[in-house]
Image (cartoon, rainbow, N blue to C red; front, side, top):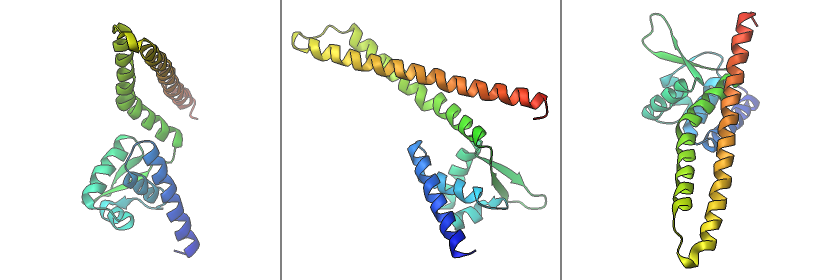
Length: 174
């Protein structure tokens, strides 16, 4: 591979790794996706270990997560006991999978936590010296709770629209 392609690949993998850590996923997960995405042929776990430079255990764990999110797909080659992986290239599917996963787990817990905190503040009997602080907490928590509820509806709408788009386009053969 030429120096330019090597540099481009390394730069791409670093960028994808930054995005994955921003979304709360391990850096290695991004490096693995970047490596698989820029591979013209499906890669085995051993090839991923070699190219990414992490342990086989880390690759195995992260590949299952990538597969669950729909970011990579397992490819079985007849007569070969190894599993191979190729990257999903439809980024709408990738985003939808990530939004579903994040929305389903962490986001629901965050919304619940903010809502519970707001209920505690609203139901509390503030100490005489803390009325102003209690009102401040209530205002801040209420604002964040409303934002989370709106964001939750937005994510659900994006997923529903994409599901509908896929269903309609599928009926007409795209």
